[in-house]
Length: 278
Image (cartoon, rainbow, N blue to C red; front, side, top):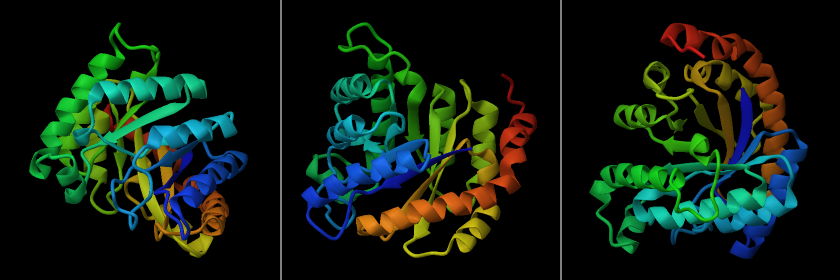
């Protein structure tokens, strides 16, 4: 199971401070052995996070790192122009040496939908339409620069069975942040995925939480046997850099203690149970 870190790019200082600290945090995550580093998108909501433009900040992260994969966790596809997303993603993928993990979702903030003049109640249908157009552009001949392999690094953040089924049918990875009840839908995803199944389970670590408590919670997590990646994030969102760095250390200790208990189900159980074949 791969380990990733997700930040909402908040903090106790200014947005400029948060952007600088996020680059430093990504460097630290790479040094600590994390496989991926993800940033969340928020519009006009300092309480949730300072970052409306993930591709811009991840371009700076790409220049400061060399190995760690860079994820959008996530772009609110229902609010975006798919060609603009595809072009920005392709440029970032080229700059980073094909390290982009392109996460998209419907978006959960009604205020953001209003800012963009969109009907928030239609966000799931709008997201599905945007995902289909985005996939067509990424796989087509008109994208400059081209982005070979990026279609295989797309993720759909969803908490519903309908969303899981939609991702499975399109061969897209799933990001699941549901703390309870996600396991049956993830098992369903493994059975129905049109491409190799990829599941990233996102979980919270409270600032200052002991590693033993985190490990115990992870061991009891019914979704982890279906996960190929575990994305950890610190709560509250507005945590300073020192708090994030402490979480990196806690995460390394907690996961090493917890994953050993679920490694066999992750490696074999879902494939066997769901009928997955290589």
